[in-house]
Length: 139
Image 1: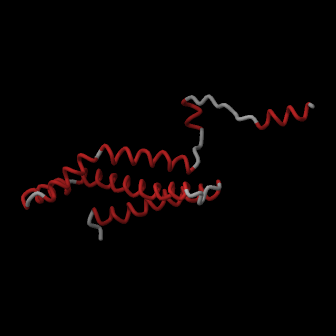
Image 2: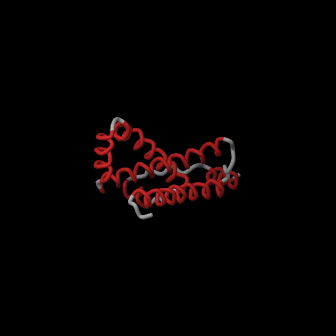
């Protein structure tokens, strides 16, 4: 009887009252990090949509507005902002494909989900680096 009660106690979930000090020590798995970054990138894309539409308008309206567009996007701080938006798009896209595969129950196992999260994170960074090199005229 005592052994059965001990087994029940072992199977119960652990409640963690996470304060700031514990939150710093808590290690989030890769899938959790990618999930949070997916939400952050989606929010960034949504919030920067007016800026992106303004840039699109400036690039298409006329020849003079295209020159204005080039002047705006030639500034290094704007290039860094654009690089952040490029990362947001690429990460959001890659993570979205991962979530579609998870919805199809592909890669649901813990090891596979962890591996796919790491791949999404690295793929987003690698694609951003490639586009960033072109953005800063390094190739």
